[in-house]
Amino acid sequence: MKSIKELGFEELFPIQAQAILPLLEGKDVIGQAQTGTGKTAAFGIPMVERLDPQIRKVQGLILVPTRELALQVAQNMHQFAKHKKLRVLPVYGGASIERQTRELSNGAQIVVGTPGRLIDLLERRVLNLANVKVLVLDEADRMLDMGFIEDISYILSRAPSNRQTSLFSATIDKTVMNVCNRYMKNPVKIFVSKDEIGLTQMKQHYVVVNQGAKFDALCTILRENQVERAIVFCRTRHETSKVSDRLARKGFRTQALHAGFTQAQRERAIGAFRAGKLDLLVATDVAARGLDIEGITHIINFDVPSDPLVYFHRVGRTARKGNEGTAITLVSYGEMSNFNNIKAITKTKIEELKSEWCQSVQDSPIVGFY
Image (tube, rainbow, N blue to C red):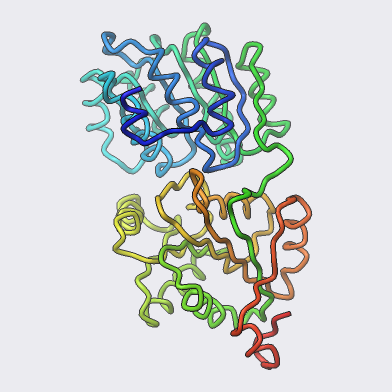
């Protein structure tokens, strides 16, 4: 309670209100909740409450799909656990396995890790899951999309069968349910905003523009809307780097972020953005999941994703924790079909952007807005 008070938590989000009690009771839980709705606290606070700080062995295990999410969840868990004196360790590829091994031997009690590195540590016999009491699969749909099903099965087979297991996912499809049916016992099912994917506190807009005029439209949007802190999403690594370089030449403080970067480069970019040294992060979908940075005011989709759910994961980087946010999508004529698919699966209105600059270029042969 002291940690919760220090973090400024006053009201429960729906997933927290519904998940915390059954988790405290030791029940297995399946939780569906959109990104940014407080699910880390929903599973993290009960985990901290149920573990014994006197036992200097791994008792809590949280599986996550990416390095960035491992760091973020571990930071949150450290905040929840600090007054209970539980030691939290993130483990992921691209970082020193020797340091992670030392931390484990020093008595880490909660491990937050990506499947590949967890298996590496298990096979080296430096990670022992025999004392795991609480196990969480976070962003389960993303882990399955990335092909981690066999890795997850192996890791779960090394943990005690009488453990508590919970699974959290933005989407619950047949593949996710297969995992639930195989590894969970009479789970409590919690579906938050199941029929409403868009977040109500987010303003969503779109602009129809010729593909060749998208960059000029992007610059105008950034200036017209006085964008202070935004992520611009692009489809490819090449386009991400190109857009970031062009924005830098226009005077914007910006950095590209994609899977072609080393882990150290990615952490530096995210750290600079988090610290306010950058105004814009231009990213591929490597950053669309699990990247939790305070104060992002805008998400701009330079490209329309072909998968409608990717759109919601992207725009979920803003309007987090009850704050407001704005998402703007640049839609070329060739992308209208994909964009209509997005509009079809949300009840939240995506409004056409109306402003003076739209009107001024309406008759332009290069850019077409309507």
